[in-house]
Length: 252
Length: 246
Image (cartoon, rainbow over all chains, first blue to last red; front, side):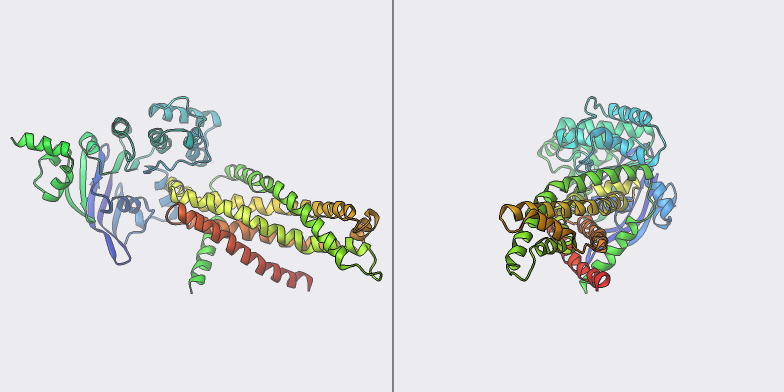
């Protein structure tokens, strides 16, 4: 479980995150939703230590990440898997080498064991026969799945996903959502997903925080989100014609 | 005052670069990859430039020494000293600062803007050491060999074109390049080259590592890497010449 308490982050004069608090529960996909530019990615980067906080605490299973020494932070980072918006696969390495990379650096596994682990992770994300291809030779959806395979190769306790279905077609988006959801339950990990895609919210939103102008203005789950009377959230949720029509029909 | 900010950040980066590696064997493999990419990949340009510059230096020396009082073997001697003392170590290094420096800054800068470096950091990898240390060590190792090759090829170029243009005879040229040869000059050149290799790779890596933005900024970083590494290289050329030869 990860708990964020009173987190604030400024860039110069601009306050991007204001007093944000939330509990990210283990074994559930935890979603941070909100419009573009509300500070979702900044929140994620603060949580994993890529950005320094101005105030607040980030507790990994009760231990404050910011108070950890260098060694403890390094240890925690090895328990973190992260899926970046663009995949962030290493261009100079093949798909297999990408998945093997953390295993080579942090484990004493033999070459054969590493390959086996890479293959099982790639199979888990439904990718076969692409081991020798480079990231530039595969599609966007495949890149995301390879990134997930790399993220789970070290058997992480925490999985962070920054807009996992941005730039993907609806069918592939659903596949990625299902994959994240299944892995979260299978591995019993704490998953944090940043998204503004309502399909994802309705698909895997077991625990949701809605971020607006850097502040948390609502929290709940995918069932509650459709029946909230929070105006800002309603504007966000029913922004698409499809959901608006759906709501109107429900109302009638 | 911005310059002090960059100098400070450069040394902080070096501190991370030279911290204990996660796994020696991975770094050893990366070292050989970089020797191949930075060193062997530069063989062609070094060879072409050296042959032609050697030829030009010989022809210019012959043109300048058109006097009955100066023996013709002085052409070989002047060519040798120009090549060993300055052309091969400094000019070839400057050209490589353009080729290798822009390639390093572009590679690391692209990794930065596409979040590949962030991905490494999240995994707990010291990205600065993983990406930069093998480049610095590999180039410091391979550049002296490239420069020795450059010296050899420049003299071959000088001999061929000097003879071809009737500027000098083969016997006089070969006598000239052996006349009063001081091995210390080669040592001086190699010491300079090792320092230059460090400057080129570390300055270029610094600019790549702290790239912010997108493709445009990666291009800017590459340009800055070449400009600043060339300036620092020339400054150290002067400093080392004063220290080692004066």
